Amino acid sequence: MRKSVNTGVSFGLTSGTITTLGLMVGLHSGTHDRLAVAGGILVIAIADAFSDALGMHISEESENLHTGRQVWVSTGATFISKFLFALTFLAPVLFLQLSTAIVVSIAWGIAVLSVLSFVVARLQNISPWRVIAEHLLIAIAVITATHFVGDWISRSFK
Image 1 (cartoon, rainbow, N blue to C red):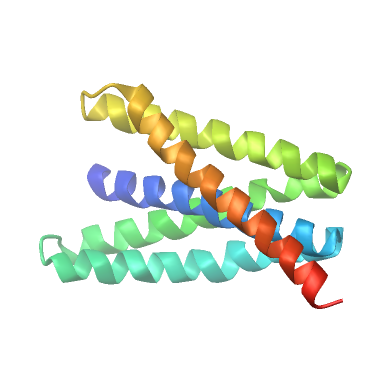
Image 2: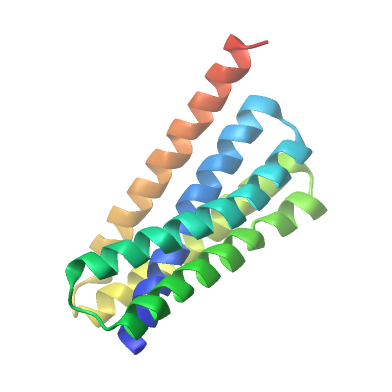
């Protein structure tokens, strides 16, 4: 069961970080509107947590290696970790200026990804720095791409 929980939590935290930051940065650069960003976080927390949990469920079932209980534990761990972690990005948006909240959220997301990557590397007995760099590079690529997409949308649809 522990492996099932670890699978769901690591997936949920990673997806919660990347998806939520991408959405926040894109909505911020496209609208500069606190309500849009806060609403986006809530939508991601609900819809994407269910979507990822179902994706995990089907993926685990398709491997045909896990008991039904293991599949459901991974599914639940994915949903709960994604849902709750995505909601952590709401606090800065509610209590700080929006541009400051975006910076704080990016720092928070990078910190969580770094710690998670470090733990995963240690569990695999490999050097954590390469794993951390690889995962942060992907996160930065998503953040950068969504920023420019938000800018483009803002310019194109005004």
